[in-house]
Amino acid sequence: MKACRGVTIIELLVSSSVFLLIMGMVCQAVVVAYRAQSKTVDKVQARREALTMLGQLKRELQTTRPGMLLSGVPLNPGPAQHLVLRRNGPNQTLVQVEYWLQPLGPNRPAEIRRLGPGDPSGGQVMVRNVRGFDVVPSGTPNMVRARVWVATLSAPIEMEGRLLQ
Image (cartoon, one colour):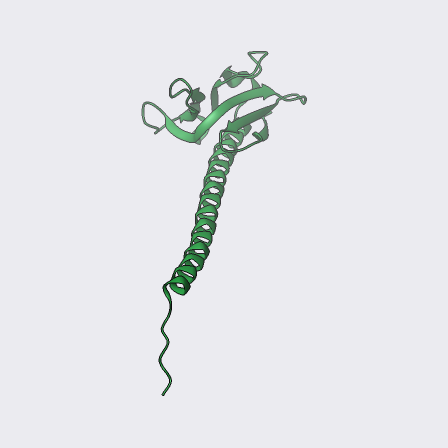
């Protein structure tokens, strides 16, 4: 009769070490993938917020006559970080709207806020995690360019809008 041979302690240690090494590599790959996915989601959300705000600003600029910009673009030769405009509202009434960069503290990104009819007294947050925001005259008459620098994105998001003629 043959004797049953079991697993030696050396074989058990080697197989356990190989198993743990493979599991460690799999766990590391999962962690790297999760972090990359999380960063991508943050970038997509930041871009979506900025594009939504710039789209709304563009629509409001298109209903604003050149003389109705109370502060900001053509009145100031440099870039504006606080824009106040009056635009045509319902029934040809004038509606005042403000956009501004709200700092949150030293060494912290800011927010872009909008204050218009029906918004809370401190304005509504349009874009978070902002490094910069400006509105500058474009090369074409009655055109303005708005730019937003979001901390999670490498390049600014830009939009051009034409004032109502």
